[in-house]
Length: 120
Image (cartoon, rainbow, N blue to C red; front, side, top):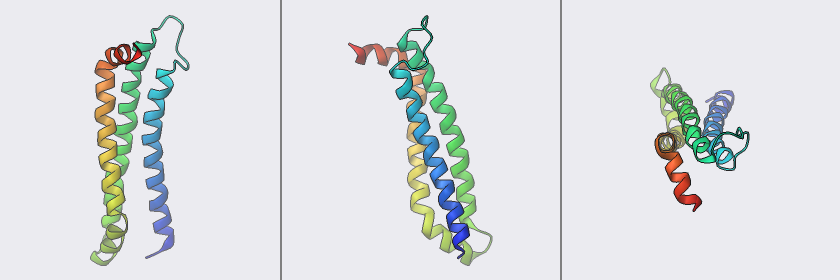
């Protein structure tokens, strides 16, 4: 198998992981009130970060689905090599993206209450 193909697929995995990191980073920034307007409560600002987290997770899930199609290949031999090489990483990242998406939805819906509860 070509190392150029493997490199391209590894870069795609790194990009998907960076989307996951950005999804979490947005919530951390919101929790410490970075870029928060003065008139906005921090709890509400944190709640809104859940929407951005969900958007990042949607993009990451779309990319991981395309990645799965890429490692399946067009022929059986090609498919088997790439699938065996990247299937575990793809599955793990897919689960992480799903968990982050669920977390983003919870924060989006109840983030203000969670922030107030844990801020005590």
